[in-house]
Amino acid sequence: MAANEGRKQSTRRVIRPEDLDRAELERYGKILDRRPVSLSGETVAEALSRALLRVRGRDGKLTPLVANAAQRAFERRREEHNIVLKARQMGMTSWVAARFFLKTMTQPGTLTLEVAHTQEAAEEIFRIVHRFWRELPEELRKGPLKTSRANVRQLAFPALDAQYMVMSAGDRNAGRGLTVQNLHGSELARWPGEAAETLAGLRAALAPGAEVILESTPDGVGGCFYEEWQKAAAMGVVRHFLPWWLEPRYRARAVEEESLTEEERGLRAKQGLTLEQIGYRRQMRASLRGLARQEFAEDEESCFRASGESFFDLDRVETRLRAAPEPMATRANGELQVWLPAVAGRRYLVAADPAGGGSEGDFSAVEVLDVETAMQCAEFAGHRGVGALAALVRELAAEYNGAWIVVERNNHGSGVLAHLEQAGAERVFAQNGQPGWLTNMVTRPVALARLETLLAERPDCVMSRRLLGECRSFVRLANGRTGARAGAHDDRVMAMAIGLGAREEILRLGGR
Image (cartoon, rainbow, N blue to C red; front, side):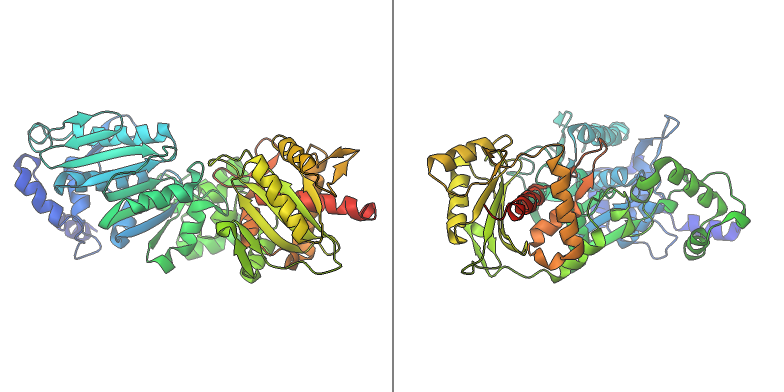
């Protein structure tokens, strides 16, 4: 044992902070990504972190940043483009901040950009980074690493022409006008708004050879992080999965081996877990219940589905997603997709869930259904004002044999209905003598139940992969209601549910 420890220590690099000047920093910058000869050795980044950087421990005291098991696992496999799926509190945000801080201070001309899911999280990351700088030797802080700006968002080192910036994903201008050498997307699963569009804008700012690290705990099936994880291998992005048992703090009182369940025995045999880790696992599952698999990930699949909040049967949704056909035609810059054209003699309905029409926020969604079969024929989703949406609905109704027009009359729907009335639209669906469909505490769950039944019993009626994608992220919320999880949309889901609800009433009344 002592001999092994001696060999491990011998592989550590000796770095003397007092000997560092600009030339020495740049020398380290050129070899920062060099990996150790042996697995027990340190990377250059690990050695520099231990020698130079300080973090605040759980006891409140400053301590050298020594890479933990999860951080070392990441360093051994890290490449130019990376995505990290992790259990919570594994130290990855601090480690990426440290790694990129070292790159910024050792590689002149570097711009590092950290993007967090909230402004508060961005400011917390910056406090970590600012502490790195503040605890450096005075000779560095007053020499090559003297700052010209040090506010809540930015550290600038004019001698190196280098900057470290932190932003919120809610900032519409994040990354705009910048040329970024290092990009860290923190808690991507929880980015607000159109996270995929925000990420695309940030990628457009990347310099050739830029390093990218996207990391997050999971937050349900669907959404930007889920999609990035699924397509990572095809895009040449290295996937890093960091389960909870890599963190040594996650231990509790040992359980009796005789009490182990079959699942626990299998997990222990496969992962080499101790009885103390099994004890911790039982504790977190008792306290977090359905969220335990999500917050303390154990495998790359179940952690996305683990919350138990999904409204639709995910196995059925995934099966249909794999089989769903491409549209036969697309129009309106891809916002309108058509799978089945109108057939003479058949009855159709056009169901619309209007939104505000602005360039941000929810989409207005329209579904075209065959009344007899509930087959999805066409779908629109985009940002349209009430007048433009009313015109589109009329055009689709005319194309589909003078279809029934079903418009949710809540909120902006009243404006769409007013435009339809002014234009003399015929066959406008009405409830209790009032035009439009009213979504309320009674009609909403019934309509959603019809969509749930359709997916379970006749999934081939659903053509749209975009709709199915929304079904994956449609969940039971903490307040007891249902809707899209944070960062996702449910506009197509609601338009389809409204269409199916209205279809039942049309059939019940004989199509009058």
